[in-house]
Length: 299
Image (cartoon, rainbow, N blue to C red; front, side, top):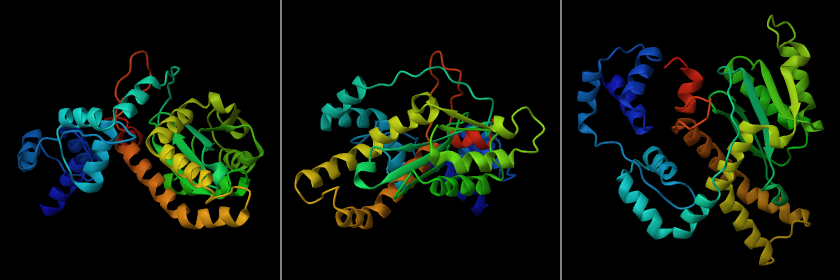
């Protein structure tokens, strides 16, 4: 009983709704509860609400506070607090809403998008990520000293394949030498596939701006996470404490900040994979939580 309640508390703290908790309990943990039983168990908890903070939307900050700090405030209070504490940030986010083209994936692990985030590259931090096109679940999000070396990208890709237990039908990446190892590995893994996406057809090159799903992710990453680091490093450079042409400065900056940025990226990925993607007008992609869309698309 305690184990079951711990599972319910876990999904509750992630922000899952009752039908999502019931589905996870049944399909993942083989625990069959009625909605009435679940409501009784959750009766001791306050109603799940949303909150806000600086540099990210109030919904995103609500998730961070609930998951990382077990703090709960009302959505309306958070919205007003954000407007009061950071009116410039609210206005800035409203002005930069991204208009996306329509995209639709066939299902989880049909199409993976991989790409690099270069906004921190001038300071020696190269971010690389992969995302599932259907669920928009982040498959990996890592930072290293380079995103131009094929071996680095291949290491991330192979690690993802091991965790997923296989590869996608198609992998899409930018046209560049850094993706040659990934292309070879993907084509090898899909060499004996019986569907129409085998061998060379299993890897797709394209322009960075056309890699729609992950470019949308980079927009969110910059707004919620990377923009602070960009401004921080600009201040260090402007004050003369950091010179990007000095290799000693670059190595020292990496030594001091690499672990912090890696932890921040992993937290961003964890929160992203559990946030709710709201239905959008004229959007064919499904709404819901990336983790649930990826692992339980039938829910």
